[in-house]
Length: 287
View 1 (cartoon, rainbow, N blue to C red):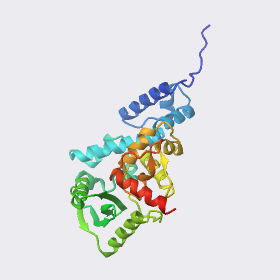
View 2 (cartoon, rainbow, N blue to C red):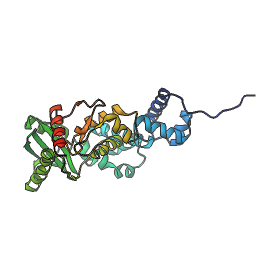
View 3 (cartoon, one colour):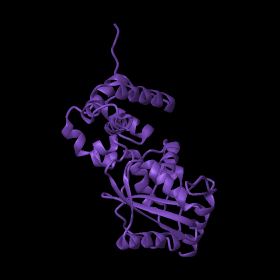
View 4 (spheres, rainbow, N blue to C red):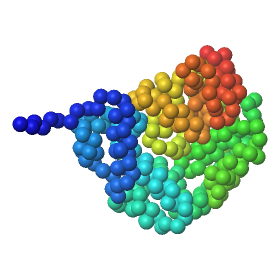
């Protein structure tokens, strides 16, 4: 007699990765986000085991992955400028406008119609200053600080901001905004002085988990990409952690300069490895 057996958890990481990749493709292809039970059944796992395997492989829960995919779909559709906001919302799998608008700020950083129009009518204050590490640009939307950039060329920093928000109204900051810039400069010159800025952090749920972990690294200390992956409960996501560090646009406030390779060597830094080395040197000297 043939006896039915309960599907067992795959025995190798590669099989786990294959199951998760298949689940991701199902999420991406579905008109509506699949249920956890449905995804687990297709994977041949219990919902509990599937949830654990998926999070370990991606750094996200299945729901967070579905939410991030839908957010990316909305952004891509709106950026083309061809679909209406309503069409973009429903095409991305949101079954009600209200569900989308509950999270629109975190997804887009501005009103959906403004995003579709390349930042049209969005008002962003900015100021450019000088630090001992070069030029600095700080920009703030209505939600908070949306950019902190370092570089050798102040004009290039401004062009980068214009490229990110091509149709937004960029205005020079007033005296009170200059005080904010002075605070940010202070973070660079004396990086072990913590300042709680109202950060306008945009990114996926995974990136936000990584960025939060970075902010918990004390000044004067470092962590490896592998250690950050461990701390956020996703030890297999080392490359994704490195990608999240590279995507950070808030220099110093989200201290990706404190993340190093497992052998202690300095890896790439959006604003230059020499600036990373100097920031770490200053933090070490201030301990």
